[in-house]
Image 1 (tube, helix red, strand yellow):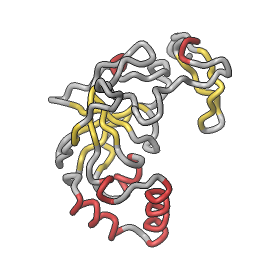
Image 2 (tube, rainbow, N blue to C red):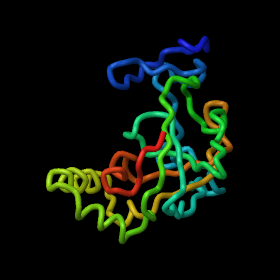
Image 3 (tube, rainbow, N blue to C red):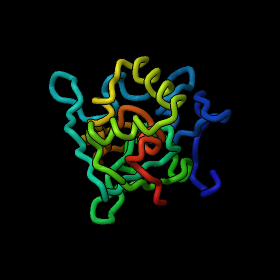
Image 4 (cartoon, one colour):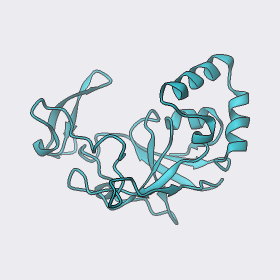
Length: 182
């Protein structure tokens, strides 16, 4: 890695390039990243195996951050200007592999503001978002209720707090609910 850290290339490909991981233990026999089980989304689980989450209740003025493009669905809160340490985020990648971004919540994320943002989208964007929601069995109501919870111990890390959006950060930007600030 350019920053001097050691990494191993997984068989996963993103934007035409193999994805690096910090340890060979993070990949299966085929070299694919061993993500947490489907449906857990990397959250700590209750005794029945269900993610322990609550409404993120995101309000205008709050700041969140993420490593990686706005095409992802996960972020973490920044509380009192303090960002979550990289090693508490449960990511397989070496620090510095993904670009760091901060976003300000521009409008409270609630159903009223999601619907208003949707109504302002171009017809093409409306059709695209609607198709994506239908493909995953989601609704505008789901978009209005991002969930947060403690990050499970994965990839030798975890313990921080993550926010799961129901679609990419990019869509929340298009809806006028988030804007990149850093």
